Amino acid sequence: MNTAANPNQRPAERKFSSAAVEAELQRVAALITEPELRQLFINCYPNTLDTTVQYREIDGIPDSFVITGDIHALWLRDSAAQVWPYLPLVQQDAALGKMIAGLVRRHAQCILIDPYANAFNDGAAESEWQSDHTDMKPELHERKWELDSLCYAIRLAHGYWSASKDSAPFDPPFDPPFDEAWLAAMKLAVATMREQQRKTDRGPYRFTRTTAWQSDTLPCGGWGNPLKPVGLIASMFRPSDDACVYPFLVPSNFFAVASLRQLAQMVTALFNEAEFAAECTAFADEVAAALEQYAVVQHPKYGAIYAFEVDGYGNALMMDDANIPSLLALPYLDESLIGNDVYANTRRFVLSEDNPWFFKTAQFEGNGSPHTLAPMIWPMSIIMRALTSDDDAEIAKCLTMLQHSHAGTYFMHESFDVHNPANFTRSWFAWTNTLFGELIVHLANTRSHLLQGAAHA
Image 1: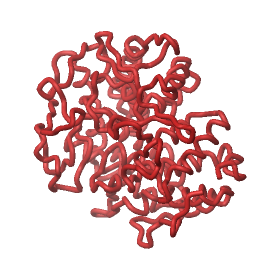
Image 2: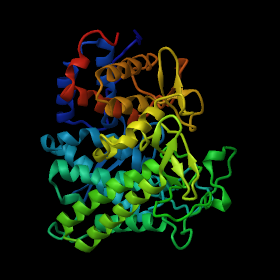
Image 3: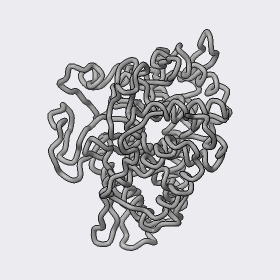
Image 4: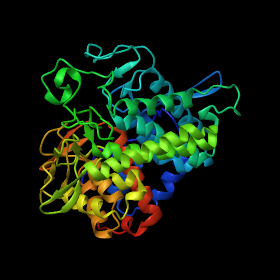
């Protein structure tokens, strides 16, 4: 068992407190009989609230800026994922609900500033990436076009609306003062996705960076590698912030399909925008059809599987990256893919050494990322494997690996060396911490027996 001088790593001074989260923490912790696993949960589940939330009210309107951890900037993706596990509690805690509503509003403001940016400052500020060769603005921390960023903003808005039944963050006509900032942001998001189908031209987005890292900049003058317009949406960067090899990132296009359908539901119910809702639905149908036609590859060992990236010309990149969206995470982001035969085949490929970014030893196995090089496993991939599994033995194996990978820190990390967990990246990565908490709460609600006994010691 790993031990630390003080396993309880929650800070004495916390950025944000929620009575409902604290109650849920105690409820679930009481179900975990293994002390080390219990302490991991106690530290990780509230980590986003403890360390990353900056909440305020401006003229009585909630505003939340949620940093990713050791980088003082808001990523649309990370911040949405960081607060996601708390959504089931918003009706029990008005303060928690207002904080998440404030983040929904902040996301809309960010998109209106620049729908192509992935990370934002809290207002105008300096950024280490200010010299990037793209249309940088003072409010931007980084301007990498990542399709999933817009999808995460939609997912959080839909999740909050579904959980809270609160319309306030969306500024509909029946919520004075009349201000449709959120709707305007969503229309801009959809228009940006349309631009990046690149049916008539390459669109306005270009990006290069003066760097020694190939994956930190785009080829072909900043436009990315060539593509054939087939209905898919180009994403120049992955959720890892690494440049795509082929411009159509398959997991992000699946995410876009789910997000567009969610957006159609919301604009119908909140704004009675039948025309925009129909546009979103038709767009989702178009991308879904293109995925079935261009993203499925016949593998000699696994049969029909989804490629990680394609270009519309018939070229495909066969791998998976630990960041979410990933091929492994597809049913986590879109429940309609549960039971999908092509996904099942893809999962077998992804969790095998035929995936070049899957690493395995006698003690640990999981997916890594070119972002952290080989042979670093991301705890996020192990967590996602458990969240998308219905096999007790597989889930228990994932729990054991997670429990033994924290290297005495009692937190999750971005990645760790498959041969030596003490060699890890990012000691403060709130997304993975909170995602681990999400897994444990999920198991407490569905398979509590896996949290009991000494199976993970």
